[in-house]
Length: 88
Image (cartoon, rainbow, N blue to C red; front, side, top):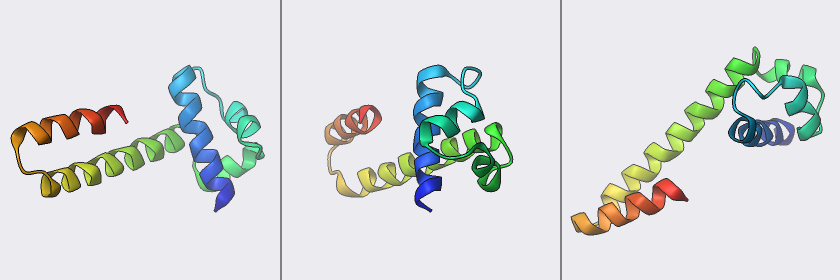
């Protein structure tokens, strides 16, 4: 599982730096220190990997928003925490 996580973290960084079109599975594999077939073992391809990263990010953001709603009393605090959440 460590290799998959390294692969996902590396892919997320490369997608952010180079964009979807500028990122290749070969580049992801090289940067992550894994073989390209390992990508295809876990994902059907670059698009599947990209969607996996987006889904995980959305889930994390959603969980943080739920925590924010439960832990915050005033509207001002909610806005301030939402801004911090978005940028961190």
